[in-house]
Length: 401
Image (cartoon, one colour):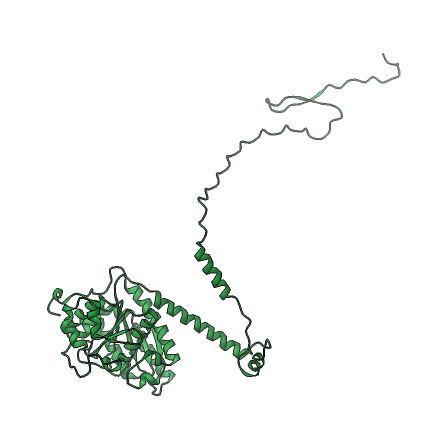
C-alpha cells in the first residue's frame, strides 16, 4: 500500500515487436529507443574456391653454353662513351682527353653504325639461308651491254664469298658469251664440253673439271677461250641446270639477248628469281620491259616477272635524278617492286677479269644488300616441293620444246 496522496503507478504492459513467424518475439521495455535490431542473416553458402591452374613442370634452365654466350654478348654490347676522331676535337681526344665528337661527326657515326648493322644483317641472311633443293637466279635483259655478265659474276661471287662456296655461275646465252672472258682463269674445258659430256658426269670431282674456280669460291662455267661451242638449246640448258643442281646449292645464270630463244626459255623454266640489270637509258629500260612482257606468256615467266629485282648499273656515264625516276616509274608500272643500285667501280668498268676482292667498298656493300634481297626472294620461291619447273635429265625430256 502507498500513501493516499501518492500517485498510483500503473505498470505498462510489455510492448511486443512482431516480426515474421520464424523470428522469436522479444520484449521492449520503456527505455528502448530507436529501431529494433534485426538478427544477423544466416550465412550465405560460399562457392568453392577455383582451383589454381597447374603450372606444369618448371621451365628448363638455359643450357650452360647458352648462358655463357648470352653473357658474352651482353658484355660486348655494353655502351661505350664516344670519343672524337675528327678535327680539333679528335686531336685533343688522341692525347687522352675525354672529348666527345661534335654534332656533324656524331650524326655521321650514327649513320655509319646503322649501315653497318644493315650489312651484318644482310650477311646473316645470305649465310644462314637453307633450302630443301637447289635454287637458281636468272640475270636477264634483252639489251646487250647492260651489265648482265658482270652482275652475274659479282652477285654469284658475293653470295659464294659469304656462304663459303656452293655457288655455280653458268652461261646460258644461245650464242657464246663473255662470261668465260670476264671470270678469273682460263680453264681448258668450258660450257661446250660440259654440255657434251653432261650425261657422263657422276661426281663433283668430274663436274668441277669444267669450271673456272674464283677467289670468291664460286665456280664459273662459260665458253672456254678459243674453244667455240654449238648454239645452246632448251634441252641443253635444262640438262646442264639439272647436273649443276646436284652439286651446287645456288645456280646463277648469265643469259643472252633473245628471250624467245630456246636457251632463254630453258633458263626461265629452271629459275626461281629474275634479276634485271638496267642502265639509266631509254633503250635499256624499253628492252627490259619487252623481256618482262615476253616472260608473261608462260607460267614460269609470269612467276619470275612478278618477283623481279631491278639493279641500276652505274657505268660512269652521266646520269640525272630525273632519268632514274623515270626508269623506276616505268619498271614499277610493269610490276617490279624491288630496286637496287650498283655504284660505279673502275674495276668493273675496265672490262677485264673481275675479282670480287678488287671491287671498291661502296660497290661491295651494295652487292651485299642486293644479295640479301635475292636470298629472301629465293627462300619464298623455294617451297618444299618447289614452284618452278623441276630440272630433268636429257633422257627424261619431252621433245618439241
